[in-house]
Image 1 (cartoon, rainbow, N blue to C red):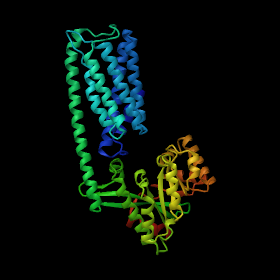
Image 2 (image 1 turned 180 degrees about the vertical axis):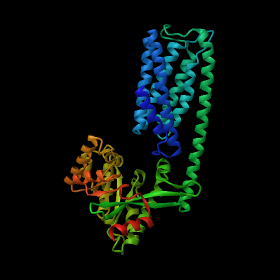
Image 3 (image 1 turned 90 degrees about the horizontal axis):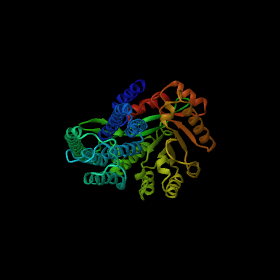
Image 4 (image 1 turned 45 degrees about the vertical axis):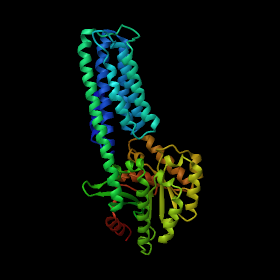
Length: 453
């Protein structure tokens, strides 16, 4: 009961977690959490029931459900969406097949009904794998429909040892058919609503670009002396109905639809304009701005030309501009990446590797790229005081950056103790709520005047 209690507490915490605030993402996360809880409870109940009857074939299937529930929950906790969905759908499909063949034979008195659940599972797969490659999204759905057709067309069963009696299955067939159809209706309704929401978001993003509804916030980056040396530029959306929206509410959708390209271009232009405004002010002349660059934006063939045009038009010192790349970007087409980076570095642009340690980059990639800064991911900084592995990773990143002549900056610093640990291990630049949350321009300039004046 202690394990189950802890599991339920984590479910409740994640249910209200603000990490994924996009409506569709939050809904999918809740569905995975609910599915993992149902698998755990159903598998536990029937596992105990069939253990007492000595029907070990069914017990193994129940054990599989329990392990799947725990696995899906753990993967959801770590935001491993694809693996969580593959595990969830794979086990559910196996359980439906096993239950249909072992316990729910087709007879004259009662037809099979368990296989009907494959229909809502097919629709659920279209939703869960919506952002995956087409072969995966439609492959799982087609597999469900093929299995449904096979099970509906054949009365075959490998053994009669686990068959439920007809008097139980007559009522059960009605109940299962009703439940499966209700699930199918509910999922179709959610799918239709989700499509409408995405269409509305597409339209609103297009309007936001035309009407300049986006605004920039700046999160200060400080050195060990407490002086502001730069800021990370973070976009916000001043939505006319929903108010100020954080990037987590629209950036993923913009990335998936390609809207991230014009949005990213707008952010770059605004950041460069701001650097131009500060160019002749001694208080801000040395302050740099770090801008996150998406994969799709960086892979545009005109990206380098557009960057150089902006730099020339506004006559800024390109050394004040820091483009932040992610590890997932640098492992794809390294030669094209290197060519573009070198062309911009020649003009003075600097590059940072964001969230270092959370992706899949190798040291062979790292040594080839003209990087200026490594950013320690906030997940490692958050666990510094409680997790020895995070401490080891942070020390290693700092030592690696120093040995390669790079700067290193820690994200997500929230306590004095975290900063002291980082200082003691050689990290001299910081960003986080210990110093300041992301600020609108007026708030950021006031912060700089207090810290640097």
